[in-house]
Image 1 (cartoon, rainbow, N blue to C red):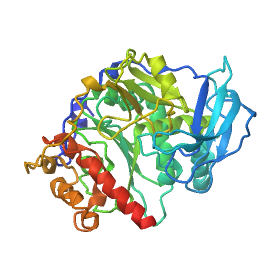
Image 2 (image 1 turned 45 degrees about the horizontal axis):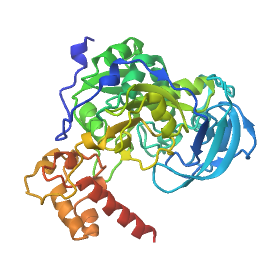
Image 3 (image 1 turned 90 degrees about the horizontal axis):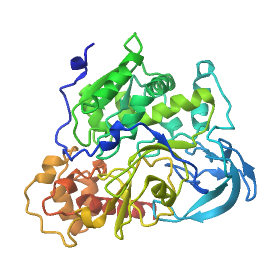
Image 4 (image 1 turned 60 degrees about the vertical axis):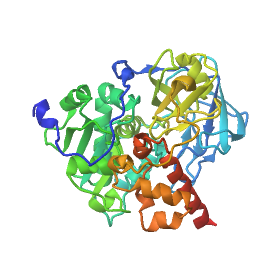
Length: 447
């Protein structure tokens, strides 16, 4: 199959085309040294926080489990370095509230090798053992959602899965960590895909890569199996192509029904970074102690993709990457479209952080302090990939008609991609309004 045959003409409707800013894509992944202290929140995933296994003053080695999974919807936590447990208590987090965390003081000269591992032969594991082995790695979705991987791959039997869709789009501006993983670790990616297919019982896997990453397509192709069970396809470069419902539409021409999940169509979507890490960890029997993070933006002197130890405080990471002095710095975790800004440089890198972007606020063209009225131009409607009416939803927010937003106008189908806010000429923060409405509805439902 030639390169031209890998390009798919189908795509999803609407979306936007932000400037890519993928300058770090041409640089190999480098390794960041250990910070003096690592801060490890017990809640780095969707679900119940991990439960600490260590005590203050206890010595640990890199890869050692320091917290265990507390139930099915939880994952363990592993020491990212050799050191001593300095504290266990509340610490600032990216989510806002302080969260229970383990503070590890790293020994000087701590080696990068993993000292605690239990290698297994994945081919000899039955389904339950394979799911348990995945949970034991502490793996979560590395695309940002941080959903426990063993649950994503342990689909209920009433939903038989035939296709694994592998998301290699990385459509967010600035981020290139997935791109570099596809280029440098294609063997790990294919190994992880095979494991995921076994866990799901899927007969095929389709890797979707945006057509601005032809080098990734070329890097993956030699490692594909001859039987055609795993294939790679170039899809249109458009945001948010990497959203699971959009990628399913582009690759398979199918639409996930409103309020539904991909597994109802016999499909599971996983990120390339997650599967590459899974392929690396299962065979070696190691736990997740680090991840690749894109560190970039106008405020960074040494932009690139780095292997970053989990728990590295932003302060140390920015010092290593050469953050330039600026009095009004804006730091964003993730991409500029769906990422979140942080108020403290003491926030640690967690498993779900794919990027750290640094801007000088004076150069970032921040939205005006006061928004202009909606001019009913329809730009947000033309941009919304879910076919919602952001104009109407915004008017309902102003009237606090949250129930009507959710019931009649499908607020729950909004996955907060930010296309509406990006397209709005009046600079109305629509997606932030929708997040607030959802938070209100969740709070009232749990009251």
